[in-house]
Image 1 (spheres, rainbow, N blue to C red):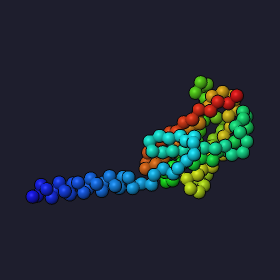
Image 2 (cartoon, rainbow, N blue to C red):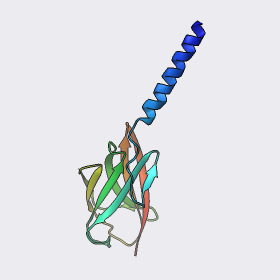
Image 3 (tube, rainbow, N blue to C red):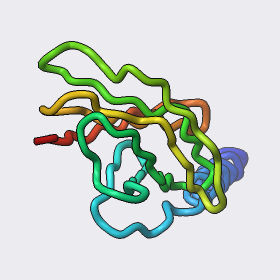
Image 4 (cartoon, helix red, strand yellow):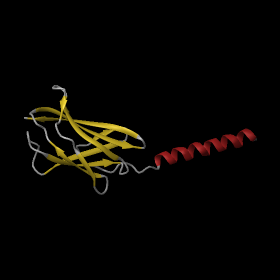
Length: 133
């Protein structure tokens, strides 16, 4: 009898734990293209004109789940082993959106845009390749 009560309590605890883990709001719906890894999603759009060599640009970045935090936006040229010459500033907006300003790709070629997003104390690095003519 005691074993049955303990087993019943364990099943209740296990069911509650699963329910508590799945109770987190699901990632918000995003239109493609979406960067995704480990339950974190991000989508970025260029504000204004398209990205061109030697011109500053800004991005609007949407992260999901909405309680995720965009900690860093950076870009590098892996083949050249260098990054941008400018530091990006981030400003939180409403509904999981962030404004990233001060980006500039100073030469043509392949760049990797990197978004560092934290959620629940864990940082996820989302990377997208951009080819600049």
